[in-house]
Picture 1 (tube, rainbow, N blue to C red):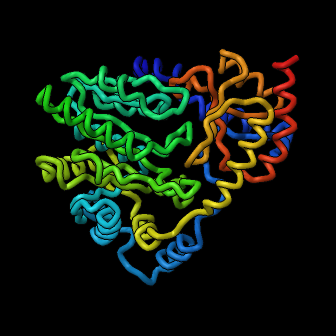
Picture 2: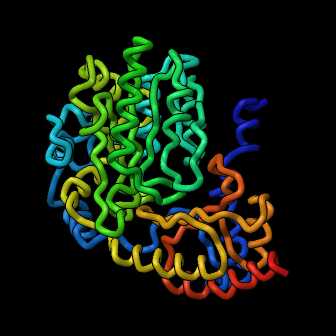
Length: 394
């Protein structure tokens, strides 16, 4: 009766959402303050004051035409602001025409993949990774090829990447700062990836596009700097959202920015606008295009995230967890205390701790902990983690 493909996909759908729903169930039983829900990357703090001020400005009714249709690519003046900011960062010439406003990064990735993929073409993804990528690629007839992880650092395994590139390789998705590890790929690593791709393109006579999914690009710690992907990859396409950088996850607002160096870039730009429309998005939410256009320089409280990271890192390692210290985003990806990460996460639920198994990110044996929660939740969870650890050391 229903789509067999979708029914099958339900069986392997998001662990993240499953644990989030479990958290809501437990909170109704025990009270929210006694449930330690680290499942969902759902920003806890309210958006910055610049965002709130812009919202008030545009909903006042004094500025007309905010809520009408516009070009499928979005308001030109907002796209121009984003292009100018990216040009300053990258040194790559960009105009409003190189930017398409989207319904979040998820919508943006689907628009890009719809515009690029022919049936059976391959998209390389570094594990661990956000598992929704599987469905996005499949939506448009592509095939995911997983590059296995180097779990000692969670930087990309470059030898594995080189071996997996074939004549069918159409794109590589890069996610840095990474969900779920919080690792920021170094500029040296990214330049080596670019060298590998260039050599393979020349060898195979193909073009490989690099899709940089970077909603965490503004959440980086320890004075690290996020390398600009457009400056490194000739065939670079940035897909970004303001869900994390401005705390607007529920507003679904983001953008695509394509390098002006891409061959036949005008055709790609037209394809992106066409797919934005025909996938049913039509255009990104008008109100929030205006809002983010006025708040591009606003920042969430990075110091607060770093304080939470440092507190958790100190306590988790003290309890015996092995984990690469995150450099950005708001996730930890520790090694589970038993090889079966799914069983480990299930047993954590006994202590009202909600985690996501690493198997949900194509990296079994680990688990993800999202610390975009209140500091009280983090502090109060430590005794529960202590009890969980005792169970495995008994």
